[in-house]
Image 1 (cartoon, one colour):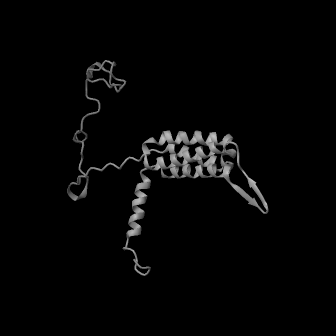
Image 2 (cartoon, rainbow, N blue to C red):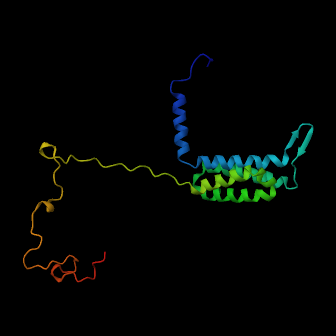
Length: 187
């Protein structure tokens, strides 16, 4: 394919829509935040930062612990993307690893990795899969002649006296006339 020939029309838009649909069915942002949190936690214990002519080494005795925590956070982020059913475990594990990174890894990658781990873990725990929308039943045409709606409750169309002669005006529904004695009137 040469530089002059364009890609198939609409292919970028179709791929973008596919990615958007995939992203919507899983805790994508939580996984991204958890993955991002692993990199500063892994990097800073092994980094040699140059400030002018001065080299600052951030190496600690717990460099191996920092590397393990960082790798685990990256793996948990990928797990959130591809195994969405373990989102609660991965979220809680990310929060715990972020907390452990505070004393082990230069204050959790200078607080940056720690905050990303906490936010991503909380997002993973809070994420719930969406419910697909239910199909609505087809509406029936309820109009009569002239476009006026027809009555659907035929009992309300009959006119009856409110208080027939000889019946007590008891609105509680517990009168002996209607067969109720009050035992089942609460529900």
